[in-house]
Length: 289
Image 1 (tube, one colour):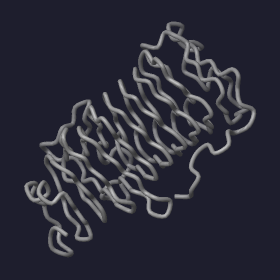
Image 2 (image 1 turned 45 degrees about the vertical axis):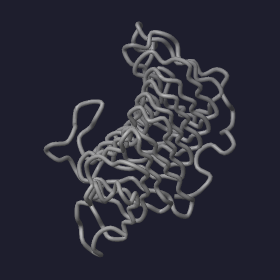
Image 3 (image 1 turned 180 degrees about the vertical axis):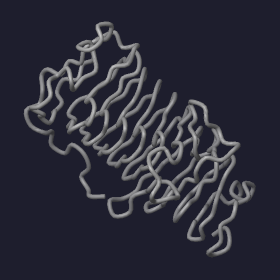
């Protein structure tokens, strides 16, 4: 174990690189660039933008809590980065929790609102795997560019954006996305989005530009306070969302549920036929957070 019990400190990066193991029963801050084979457990506190280098691999043990500090003066804040501390992954990350010991990514302040920390920001990661994880209070909980990603059996709640990506090979399977401003926001890429449960988000799906090679099926779309689906300015073609289940809202017409060509003539339309007549089996989590 690195550090003194009950103390907060910045762990020297050279020491991290040598031992590769951070057991955080003592509460520690880490920052800067990390190299080598890394293992986190216990409680890990991130101060500023922490970078997992291109040649590094980070493994996070079940039950670990990753807690992010608010924005600092010298942090990266402009897109594709975000205000607040971030975990920037250019190498590999494997975060596999268990139903009885999920991995938690959250603000250091339990009362902070959405956007209190930046993102788990994947930049060209060849392998990013998240399972049985909880993400809350982020600007964009998982943000991926040019990466290969799997997110399954995880809860994303109280974020500005739950999952945000472009130019990524990403599989999003059997997750619960609730109480986010936007549950999923993307352009380009080739996502496979299957058997998820969306509920109580402001917007469930936001296509920002030119979606291609996507598969979005067997999901349950619960109520959204603004729109089920929003098409951005650069989505002139129809979007195919067949074989999903949409919770009925008899008070709202289709043009109120979808921001598409029904509202702006230069946009494509959301095509939902055929619609599933019953919720898909095993949509959402198979465990209780």
